Length: 414
Image (cartoon, rainbow, N blue to C red; front, side, top):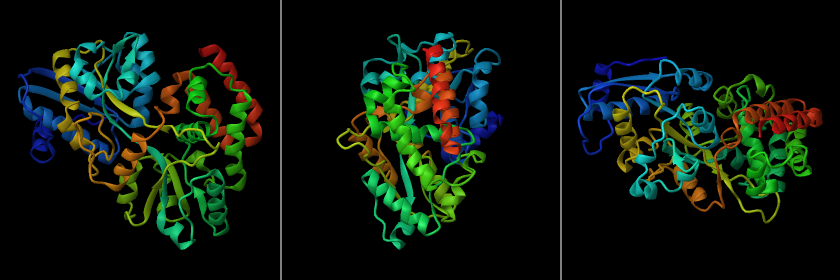
């Protein structure tokens, strides 16, 4: 945890503040908890708060940044004790337990007609029981980031079909290069692979029915998704011992050229660039078609801010949420040198960055948008599912046991 002082925030405001028209003066304390612990998001969060502090010099803002993985386990505790005034989290089913437990404030009053129109693409994912429980500040594409220079050296091109994907993979393996890096230590990266394999094998409607608990995990259509996944596992496509790495610890395999690609969110780009890869070495492609004719839906996780029900300074918290949903702030915090993601406000601008532009075009033409496996499924089902996916990647012969275990969880959770 890294609390920063009012004086530090004031100093940051001189260099990285985000500017929007001044609002009414606020006083008192404003405690903000954030999980933006990686370097670039952390700097963005500090700049975001610095800009708000500059507008409200009489407000005593305390920003606490918590390690992203630790945040996931701590949030329920700090929403009930030592409660902040603002906390960031995720849209969709990931906020449902806190809404049902009465731990998030109903902020439907902030979603007036103008805000609803400007943030229309994400309003459904912020709505439970007809009320809104947070605001979005960014979303981002998932897809395959790959070493374009390695592909060029081996005469490979971006695949568009499952057959081409596997053919490329075979060539890479024959040249001593793993097809994909991945770190499944914290499970969720395996959820990304399941999402895309299932979306492309069975389609968006089936995928959402499955994550909504309406389909058995032992269904033959799920088995077909896993069979497609096993084709890559049996080829040896993924790096060895991936269950011992975090997603960041898996990046060097791609940087060193020991693996050629990473199925990941766009937030990985800044890390790859910082590690020394130039844009002439990096490419991006949409996850390939598997079942011909199935419309391509995409994962586009939406990150959000919320006001805890026990917050002490809800007036200032509401002002902060208005600030982060302004088009000016969303343009700046999502720029390529900040979060490197996409703004939600329709009047905000997408930065002149090749990956952001490719992502924006892809999502703009997507058949539908899913949040992500651990946001679309309830927390208990998501945990059991991602544990199963990781186990399957290491021990694919355990599939029957894994699916039966997940099915028992489904019958208990929904």
